[in-house]
Image 1 (cartoon, rainbow, N blue to C red):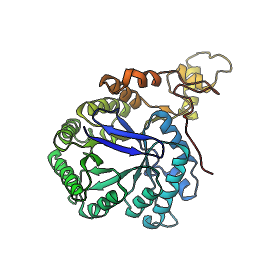
Image 2 (cartoon, one colour):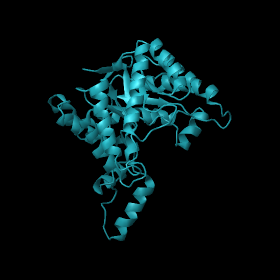
Image 3 (cartoon, helix red, strand yellow):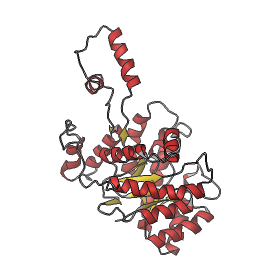
Image 4 (cartoon, one colour):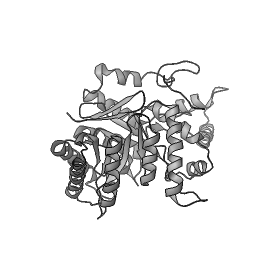
Length: 352
């Protein structure tokens, strides 16, 4: 049975057909996050610290690290991204103990991340493009790490799933030429938005089964791509993930955290409640208020997608004795207490 091993200094994450689904936290990525990009350029890593801890607390088993900031002061990522990647990797692995996924389109940043990472990180990524194959596969071999293989090549991203399968097969075969085994290739078959392509869901399920049965590889995807541009994206994601798992997908790059309810939303809801003539108990705190009205939480917590994944693990017998499901559904620990979903994780350390 195919097993892909990803390691930190102290923890191991295993991707496999008979293993619990592996959640790769995507939040440490400045793409589309102007505030985070500005912070990183200014040398402020406070959001990275919060995102790292919140994702692990929510259940991420691997953290993706992307340092793809285009600095206003220096627009050349070949110069700025490698040292930034090193800094983020060192910071994050000083805060949490899960394995890392080194993610970059800049070759030098990939190697910088590999040099800084402890253990056996996952490399993200190689494609079927010749230039990328020629650089990344020797890097994978040199550092003896697994790699995400994205199913596009020099012709771009095909809407034909058979073409995407052929690209994945090409990458697996080229990797074998370098002595890299298939169990160290994690294929991303590329999930298309269901809003743009009605067959996108069916395509990916078929592709994942074929990748598993014919190439024997583990798979991953950018899970939220499926719901792009549609309302109630969480509802679609919650259905998609267990279905993908049922087809044989073994991991996903995704956000495991339900973001906190903002003060603006709380104020709007309080005004609505007041207008309805509802009298609230005096001194009610914001957390009690948002819980009472089903708004979520004022603190980061595991998102609904994580609930769907945990349930699917239980239903596919990848949760021994249901222990993970039971633990996941324990009430959050109260302030100052340990245990439950809100408790502190052991083994965390922070570098000076």
